Image 1: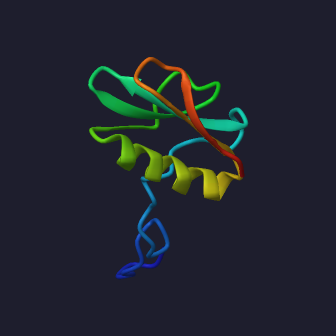
Image 2: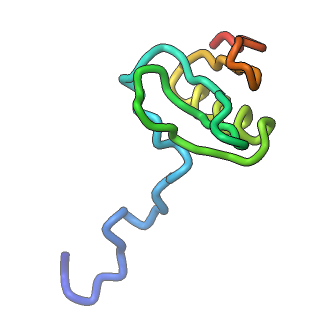
Length: 88
């Protein structure tokens, strides 16, 4: 880059840090209980993409990620059984 350029390394756009789930993993995104919080986890991933205090917030985050990666969202109850399955 030329000296004095005001353009940032990201091309002037802020990086979207809310969508860390890799599109290549699994066909589903799960909302699962984790301690007293709710985790958003892509099938096949060893780590949660996000851990949120409220189940509704975790479901919303999972749906946003699924929209961008064409995946189903599977919502679990606290006992880990499936509560809902949102098809893509």
